[in-house]
Length: 144
Image 1: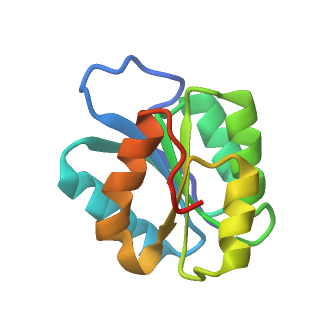
Image 2 (image 1 turned 135 degrees about the horizontal axis):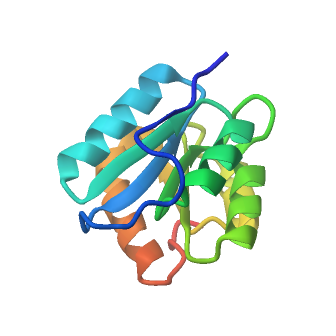
């Protein structure tokens, strides 16, 4: 079983100016890598991580992060289903889908989910900053 982690519960005030971020991936190695990259940018505060879609919904509801970065393919609820539920329930929350399986089908699923952006995990450092900027500018990533 994957553990949910968070630095706080509820929806604390946003005092740091950094984007409060939830990272969701069934691979602990991928979660750590994404978290380390986000933290290295200085504009993100990773407030929680989890390993599946059901846990992601619980944490997102409790924490109401600014940004959710989630894997498209996970056991149980996939990232496309989670993105659809989150964007429907929390219009201000930005959701980015990531995957190593960068195929037309993956992009179609991400686009239909209501996600704000799509990131190839193999190009995380190159694609994530632009996808975040587009999402917070109210635009959908051109990659969808």
